[in-house]
Image (cartoon, rainbow, N blue to C red; front, side, top):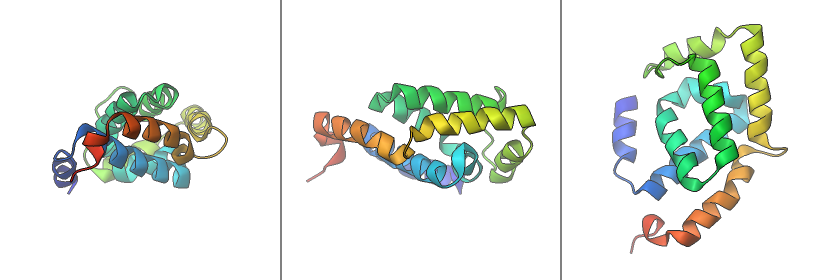
Length: 134
């Protein structure tokens, strides 16, 4: 399933992929923190990192990479959802607190999705050909 999902989004333009994966990331984080994204959809991690970079969301990109580092401890993100969930569930107390602090940075006082909106607008205004097809 994960491989099929990655193959499906690979058909989109860079902007379409960025909007899709960052919206998914934002909604899952807003609902359950970084671990709430990582367990079910962490296989999109490389795409999310690239998308945040593409959108110019530097603070979110940095927090994302730090959260990923806390969860994976430098290992590759597993494709298997159960393995990703086990990584999140097996965090030490110190790492869980680190991830909570990263969640706070991602929320930026509101929500990740709200924080992304200005980047979406800026990107859409600059790259309409990547988002709108006639």
